[in-house]
Image (cartoon, rainbow, N blue to C red; front, side, top):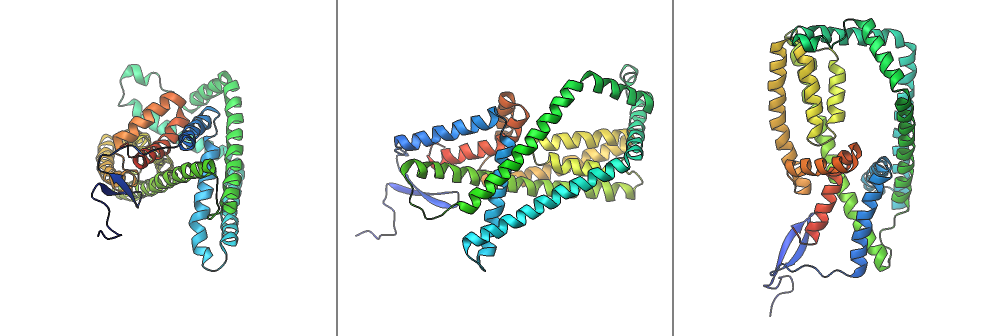
Length: 361
């Protein structure tokens, strides 16, 4: 008589997402009900709606708050009930958000108080880079560069007048996007607070809850892993730009800005590093050719190290390689532009996770 804890001979156990999944030996497809098929169709339709109606900011903001609440709640639940713990977590997150907004407001006020010297200083630094780059560029290309600060301001003013309507529309889009993110955060907090773990649901609710849970898991895996990678990359870049280069009297202009750009751009898998690295090499080339070469060598080494991190962190989390993410980002960019590039890693991780659970890949 076979033991209860042993699987039959025609069944294999596979580890998926940290949980054992039973696979038949003939790898037959699972039998899905019409309700489950409908839930998959609704999930795909929901992702299309998010991109088509430009609700990605609301989705990411809501998912971020939802995940942070559930990350903070277990530690607080040891001292109080689960519902009260989620409320405390939401209060903590709200305080952080309000503090960040207050910091931004203070920074804007200080910026306007020192607008003239800041702009003049920035223009001077940019002109130094342009002047040094002009010596290393061909004549036909250097002739296209501005000659002095006044000419640069004049060209900037002409561009602003020419594209004034686009700038106004861009400002409206930014304000609307910020509102979407804020509403998404509120909705995510409300869902995190009111979600009940042990509730008997009807079939469609159960299927949709499974889709939402797996999407949230894909979001957590991608975003938290990418934040770790971006932080590590920014730390090494800061050590190079702010410590190593000044030791050899080769400090780059706008070094702190480049570190910040490295962190923000690094939140986009693979392509973000190409953006930040291009800027660093361009600024280094304006300083000197040896500095540009050393920056290029440093970035190559960091890239090798980061590919290892991607394979260990992101790839290990969603069982995907770098080329898979690049291909997904390329297709999504063609379909939805910049929002598609941002959404591609999360959507791809979710779809691949569902395919793994369905034993299709």
